[in-house]
Image 1: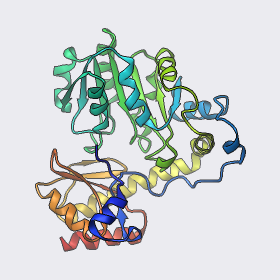
Image 2: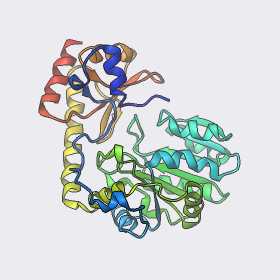
Image 3: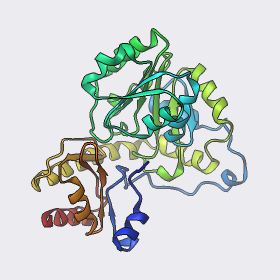
Amino acid sequence: MHHGGRLRAAATHFAIPLENWLDLSTGLNSNGWPVRTPPASSWTRLPEEEDELNAAASRYYGAGFLLPVAGSQAAIQSLPQLRAPSRVSVLNPGYAEHAHAWKRNHHTVSAVSPEQIDAVLLDTDVLIIIHPNNPTGVTFPISQLLNWHAQLAQRGGWLIVDEAFIDATPELSIASHTTKPGLIVLRSLGKFFGLAGARVGFVCAHPQLLIALNNLLGPWTVNGPARWMAIQALQDKNWQEKTRQRLLQDSRRLYSLLSQHHLTPHGGSAFFQWVCSAKASDIFEKLACQGILTRLFTEPSSLRFGLPTTEAGWQRLDRALAQI
């Protein structure tokens, strides 16, 4: 599986020093929450589930019940182990780790476009939606998501909604509805808070499923310093509000910049813009030769551009696009 952020590999391949790169490949908020030094006790004691993490996360996400995990990736890899072999429909194109995890656990996996979901739902046990979708940015009305969930839940099915990129538009989240059996929402501190290295995520779901998942994962899945930082970040409402405004503004700026260079995006979110082009591979190479790393997709042929961190980064991207 290939992901964005493989900057060291790019530096070696293109023979450009690591410090000279502009990394737009991940879709992370690179102006993330200002990390603070955790107390020494967080290093010297085992993580304690009785801290404020669950309460802080429940308030932030509006979820009745949730389980902290080592990034949403931990849940993606584990949830397929909690069901007998099932028919799984995964939004495509989308985050490929979902389909990979369910296939690896002997489920029957089908890729579906947004337009195909209604037609395949009767033959689906688990529907997986990335919302907003990565990389297309597609979103769905909450009423539509709840309708799909209701149909699946009637026969013991699941709707899994990966909300990794939703924090800048919290009004689109269905985390507050996850007290309903069969509705599972994945959240992460990696994208909006920019704390990808801390590996902190949450599964919002009915308590019965969370108990089963917790038993599977075992104790201490999130380390003590990461738990402490997550509590501080989730409680920092002032930073959250300012960051939402900035991300939405920067995303519009990126859309305009790409359009000016005849690369009008076909989709996007507050964190990235997505450009379909038959020449995506060539554009990727030409930008990389200038020390700018984007995320290349082959199916369909496309590029995902993350947001530059600084004004110098914006200007550098503008100049590079002009040259290609």
